[in-house]
Image (cartoon, rainbow, N blue to C red; front, top):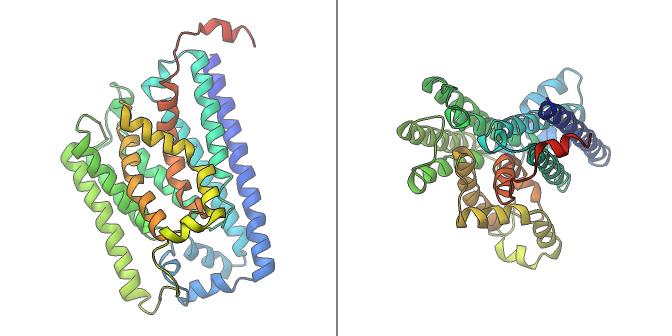
Length: 345
């Protein structure tokens, strides 16, 4: 009974985190509108924006539809953030509490799981306001939905049958298409991660069989590539990249502010890479696939992105939270008696 209370209070805490982050983000959008107006959003809606932002219309199109019906962009983006962050945090926590490592843990360790998840979620979300973009939270939501689709039910509990394969493939395609309209490179990275899992970790389990997982990976990569090609060559052929250096690696090394932001946000995730390299966690094949997929995305970010824009990696960071909590908790001995914790309340 007390374990159920832990989960209910954790859900309440996660709701507070998502509401607070969305409320704070709304005022970032508000200040941006007051200072610079809505010319950028209207230009993107009209197809006059710069690449690659012009191709990321998955959030802008519904926001512009609402704008035509009297809803301001800042209100639309604020509501989208609230919905997306709530789905991300609650779905990620649900995936965590269904893991065998969590269900078999003592009361004290389950408390540790919940506290660590809430703390890391709050830590990562707090970075999204740095160079804030309206697609960050929706990207995280779509990425978490893909994690949920690839998570094996039988791995969580042998009594739970897997979702029908054709349904999973269809949902993967739909979510991948939506992801391609927001940030196409995310879907490409996840597809590479699933392929890497089947090559380097054949023992890991996903919701799909080995062959169907490979099919799903190629579906994600094909959807991402095709959508990007259609956007750049057919829908918005006139959109061009801004003038300046394309490769940002050496510029990032000279950027003290960007390097400091990277070094402050990334240590927990860099530790996760190192720990997984030494001893990968068994029992979470989907989490391991997403960890592998985050590597090429991390390299792409360092190569052509600015390290100061740490919000770019927040979606992957949030998707990796269940895997991170399990990995960190597995290092702690589970020898504390359950009753001693319950008696303190």
